[in-house]
Image 1 (cartoon, one colour):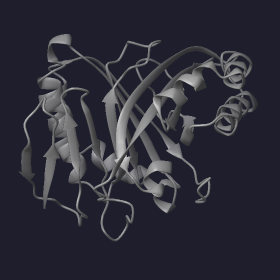
Image 2 (cartoon, rainbow, N blue to C red):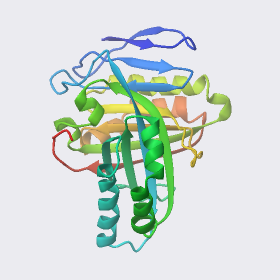
Image 3 (cartoon, rainbow, N blue to C red):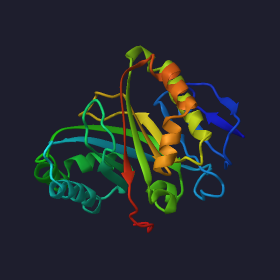
Image 4 (cartoon, rainbow, N blue to C red):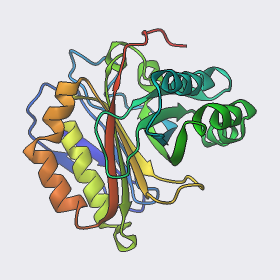
Length: 279
């Protein structure tokens, strides 16, 4: 299968042909040195009806990681997650959301994660200032948590309803994988791009494992701890484990990312079925 890497005037145009292990539909891959944004949407032609579109839609991704207190009860946890989930109905611009308890221990001891997708940067800015969200944060989040970090980045997805809104059977369940990276300052232009492009190439070879993949440069004014954010939706827990434990992923991480990453954090949580209607 062949696919194109389409670049702005800040980088050259490269065509890549790569062997693949799974049936695939045509994929598109976009990399721009100016804003370091890469988007890869993966899926087999039998399982994905919303992939391979030439038209793209810009979106804004928001990741929030929380550190809950050790004695958090089930009732308190449900209260926090329920209120965070309902914020999407209280303001405009929120087009997708997932959240849950982090599935495995991590060095930073984050316990819960929230992912939200917005139409535009302006929608995210209004979200941070929204009175309802600020009240939820004060009364139902910070009451139970003693730390949080936000990462926001721009990316692109296929300009189709299911891809934009993360709706339909493919997004109804699976595993949300969040990877936050802080590249060394000297690596931001060249080596970081190469590392991100190598990871994106891996995505194109794993359509039976991955539903959607976005990444971008963190522009959150409140959290500069990480320079980049990556969000990958896996089809299942099994798909996630196959990918993370694969020789290909480990080779890319150790050879491309580890030498230039000042800091990194990866975590995941399971996504339960929530229906398939587009709201």
